[in-house]
Length: 135
Image (cartoon, rainbow, N blue to C red):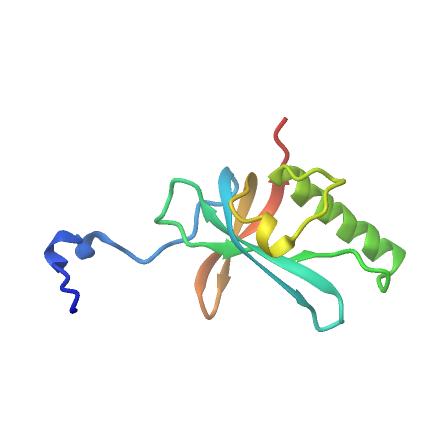
């Protein structure tokens, strides 16, 4: 059976390429996917991919979150632990929970102050400057 689309009903001429969300304002985010991996130094990380809640015109973007590891120096481990804690507090995950990174975070929401950077390959992209913990 063939599927026939009536393109006149889809308003395709009104859809534009997504753009970066404004920088330096508190922005409501939702996690749509999470990727995990090992970086070039052999250390674990995860990358939540965010959408801006209520704004489909803004492009999705990712954040790199390193996972504390025994291979790190004490200073590096402290910084990565603090970064992880800030992220978890922002998305409302208890700091004593067991967490399946690739499944348990999807759909969680948080607030963050975003920045923008001009990527030579992709144009202006967002990044997280600071996560905000809500009471």
